[in-house]
Length: 129
Image (cartoon, rainbow, N blue to C red; front, side, top):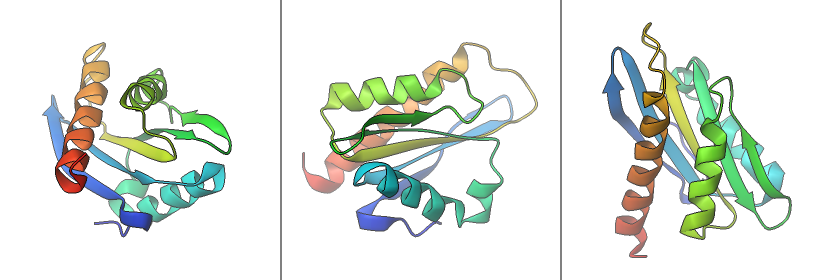
């Protein structure tokens, strides 16, 4: 598993659907440089580097909202919206998908949402907030 900065963590194998697998990672970051450093650390793990999509968003005080769909159109907007609703500043969430050969259509959006919710819940359990 990737060694993520500043207490970041990954939930592996959150969802499996029609051959696709999803994981979610996240943690605190400081601005765009911190977000990019987090992604670099995540991708040091070869399985994340070879994933089909690493869609991410970060809500930062220094640089404002940042996001990248990484080919999974609309995924980053969902992640960013959920970060904003949660009130998390200076955090990044990365939803990773390994494509299984079957197009999921709109179900992929519910999978992104479920992954982010799972990460929020795990964070609450870990931090008590």
